[in-house]
Amino acid sequence: MEGKALFIDSSVDSKSKIGFGAHLVLDRVFPAASYEANIKVNRFENTSSTKLELQNLLWALQELDPSIDRLVIYTDSQNIVGLPGRRERLEGAQYRSRSGKLLSNFKQYQEFYSCSDKRECRFEKVKGHQARSKKGPIEQIFTQVDRAARAA
Image 1 (cartoon, rainbow, N blue to C red):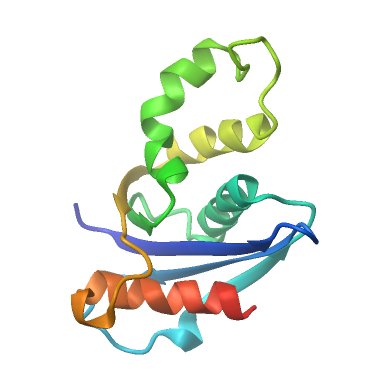
Image 2: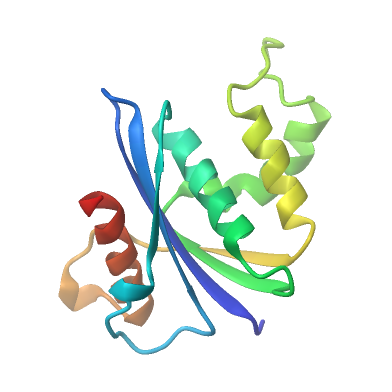
């Protein structure tokens, strides 16, 4: 799959419910280098870790040039990586839990599926927080995005 690479990560303070999302878009994955100047950071309020992951991804997707039709998304979020596989169940249940309660992040799930219908997306799970010696180029780039979110 050709196209762009999108690296995303976020960090939230559960007490204040304030979080920061960070993302980096590259033409393709390059050998490890410093990309700090190209990382975009955004503040989100009244959020949780799960909601922030979704908000950050949606923000990053909205920031992309609409002509980008193929994208590889690198994240350490199992929730994000699993969303394409959960679509049929979530839509079939009308974004409700087994008890019938509307899911708290249903709007973000709907927006995610709408955005992902507009371009071909592939999700890659990145192992976050590993020893530097075990990091390949992807993990080294992801670490820069992770640090930007945490520093914010």
